Image 1: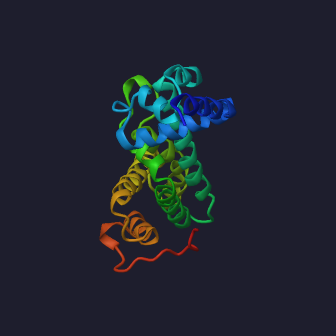
Image 2 (image 1 turned 45 degrees about the vertical axis):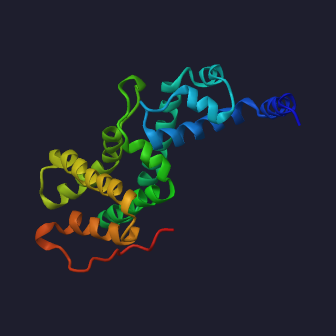
Image 3 (image 1 turned 180 degrees about the horizontal axis):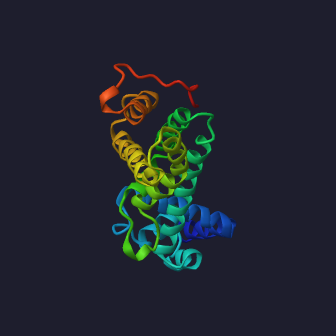
Length: 216
C-alpha cells in the first residue's frame, strides 16, 4: 500500500473528528506535555504533531500555547479546589481538616498528570495561576473554619488567614513530595498531616489515626 493511500486514510480520520473532539484531544495532549516538560519546553509544533494536525489547528482552537495552557490549569485548579471545598462540609473542624487532607492526596493519586501541571511554575506570559495561587484559592476555603475556631478559643480571628495559608501550604507541599514517593499510603500521610495541624509539635500522638471514615 502506497504513501498516498496512507495519507488519504489519515485525512479521512481527521475529518471524522468533530471540533469538540479535536479540542478535547488537544487539551489532553497539552496537559500531558505540560506535566512532562513544563510550559517553556512545550511547543505548539509538538502539540500539533502528537495530535496529527497542523499548527494552525492549535491556534484556531486556543489562540496559541498560552491559551491552551490557561485552560488546562483552570480545569485542574477547579477540580482540586472543588474536591477540597466539598470535603469542608464535614460536621466538625477536625473532620473538615481530615477530609480536606484526604481530598488533596486523592487528587494527587488520581490526577497525577494534572497535579504535575499545577506544581510546575507557570510562565509569566500565560496569564494563569501558579502553585501559589492554587494554595491561595484553597486557603480561602479553609479560612472561615479557622475564624470560627479562633473565635471559640479566644484567639484573634484576624490571624486566621495566616494560619489558613500555613495549613494549606503544609498540605500542598506534602502532596508534592508524596507525588514522587507514594508511600506511606495516603490515609497514613493524611493522619500525620492532621496530627501536626491539630495537635502541634508539643502534643503529637505517637500513632495518629484518622477518625473519619475512609474515603474511596
